[in-house]
Image (cartoon, rainbow over all chains, first blue to last red; front, top):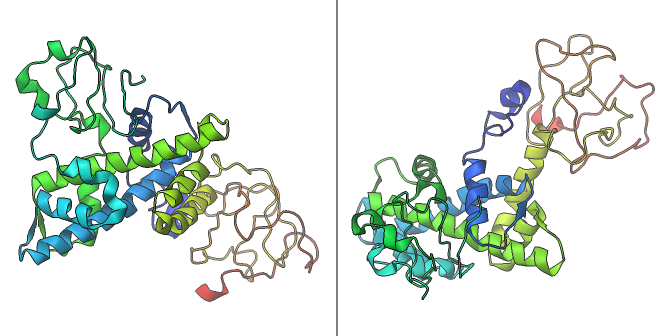
Length: 112
Length: 235
């Protein structure tokens, strides 16, 4: 991952150099998402680095609102699930958060 | 390393990379993946482990969450993990759409524009503007990656700037300290032939946003003599 020059850190507060999320990991996740993903431009993970920040912030805000509704101070998984269910934008996550049992029910099916 | 055996592009199912390592990926129940030969090798105790490689590091996720939450807030571990999983799902979701766009247009490489366009399609249009700003800032500060490295950099109302060795600038930055030899200038390249001034690194600048190629007119005379002040609001 490239580092910004010393000068940019000086004037921009340093956030523009190393990204908040590791680019190599982002790239790996992108590739894992589909067999068909072959080539990814170098800048695409950078966009995702920031996009994931925005996403985490939004999801966290909404989940915390659920926590407050429940008059609690500890955010639970159910708060995240409620936030997903009540937000149309997060429909793609519904399957993910509605798994209440980890792994056991989702063992892959063997091909005959 | 490529993932293999995935039958459903919408749901990630990390598979055959390390067939007998005992690491199993948690998979959404709606997307059973076909992993021939691997399941039989796995013990039940090992099916609950999560492969860290398919998620963002949890410390990073938590740090971003804490920026939003009040200081006294606590986060249960399973909430953290859930958000971690959601992030990966988000990346996969957008990437799939971006990839489809590439296919439709007979291109092979997913570009940032594809990503942004996919976000617009999938309802994340609010993200597009801040991401565009972020990407431009990044390109301004890491010119090795920028597509336009060698074009001369000019601001409105300024004369042609030397194409190389220009002080880094960005829209959102306050003006740097003035160069000693040119007290009226804010951003200016060092005189030809000099490199580092005060130990700072000068790098090439690409064209971004307001920057124009070529001479905008309203010339101030010979190069090296500038009176533009694009950052007047920062005074």
